[in-house]
Length: 244
Image 1: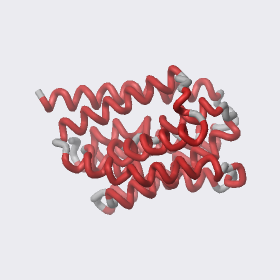
Image 2: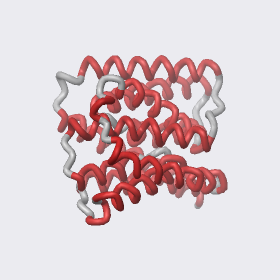
Image 3: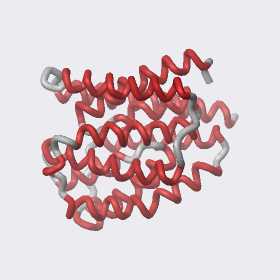
C-alpha cells in the first residue's frame, strides 16, 4: 500500500487512463484500472471503486447512443448478471487478501487472453450465449471488477459491428456495475480521495472525447490489452507472493 498522498496521485492517474480508454472504446476501464487499483487500495476497495467509476463513465457514454441499445438481446445478459453478482460478492468477502489478489490476477489475465484470441464458441450464441455471458460476467464483476470480457465474447460470436458493440457495452456496464455496487456497497475512501477520483473521471472522459477522432482503434486496442495483461500478471504475482 502506498502512503495517503502518493495513493491519491496514483488513484487519479489510474482513473484518468481508465476513463480515457472507456470513452474511446465503450469498455476497458476495468481491464486497465482494476489491477492498478487493487495494488494501490487493496482488493476490496479497488474492485468496488472500479465498479463505481466504470458505471459512471458508461452513463455519460450512453447518453448519445442509447437508441442503439438492443434491449431484446441485452435482457438475458442483464438478468443473468443480476443473479450471479451476489455469489461473486460472497466469494470475494470470504477469501484471504493474497488469494483474492491471485484470483483477480488470474481472471484479468485469462480475460485478456480470450479477448486477444477473439474466441468463437457455439455456447456464446443466441439466448443461451447471452445467459452464459451475463452469468459469468456478473460473478466476475462483483468478485474481481472485470465483467466486460464475457460480454465481448458474446458480441464477437454474434457478429456485432463496433457501432452496435459500444452502446450495448455501455448499457451492460451501467447495469452490471449498479448490481455490483448494490451488493458490495461503496468503497470507504477519504473525502479527498473521492474528489480526486471524480476529477480524474471527468478529465479522462474529456480527454477521450477530444482524442477519439484522432486515435486509430487498433492502437487503442493494443494499448488496452498490453496494459491489462501487464496489470493482471502483476496482481497475480503480488497475490502469489503473499500466499508464499
